[in-house]
Image (cartoon, rainbow, N blue to C red; front, side):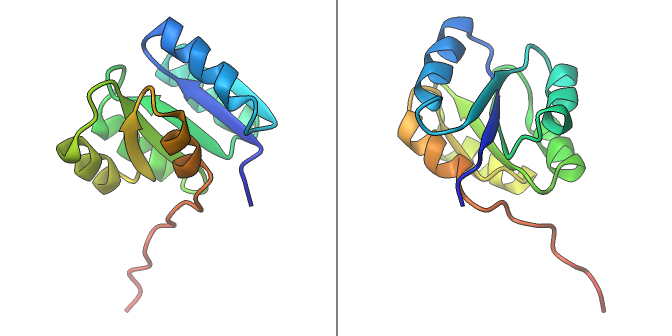
Length: 123
């Protein structure tokens, strides 16, 4: 099932506007958060299914905390120079993927994946 609502949190306003326009063809609702606190408020307010988070605007620790606070959503990290090291770190923090900021197809595919739920440590 594809997410119906996504929130975009990107550092570059032009890139965010371009991505938002592209995402409207894939999602019912697309919102933009202007800072991390706005993102945290917007996720429950808009019943977001996915969050697209720019690693130039925030760090892996913030991604980890977002994943802990909102484990049911897909978190997609972006960076204009995304590489394998960022991808590995993003996945370790709980993100569904780490994509180039301009790769709309990869962002949509990652955002529509079922998020990984926390592992149970029951004995």
